[in-house]
Length: 135
Image (cartoon, rainbow, N blue to C red; front, side, top):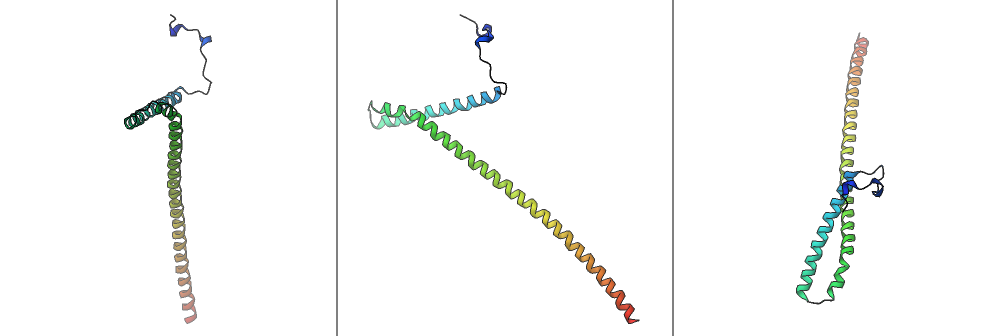
């Protein structure tokens, strides 16, 4: 037997340079859990089916269940990811709109303050002109 640590590097295939070992481990972990879950689901369905009818033909039908369930899980995962992204985008949009409203509100407040100052200047000027005309 040959020790795996002494295996020559020429017989090992090297991952690409942009390969991330951590992401590969995470992907393998997720796939492992999905496989585990699908096997449990398949076993439960098989036991429920065999409880209703003890037919040897049923094994062939359920042997093709794994790939179909895998596709169903992938579609469900894709749909959930889309909903999460849509919700996040909607929250970001609402926050952005609130920020725009706040900025516009501050600008309106400044303009109203400037109008009030101009009115004070005009009233004071009018009083000066009125007092000059009265003399």
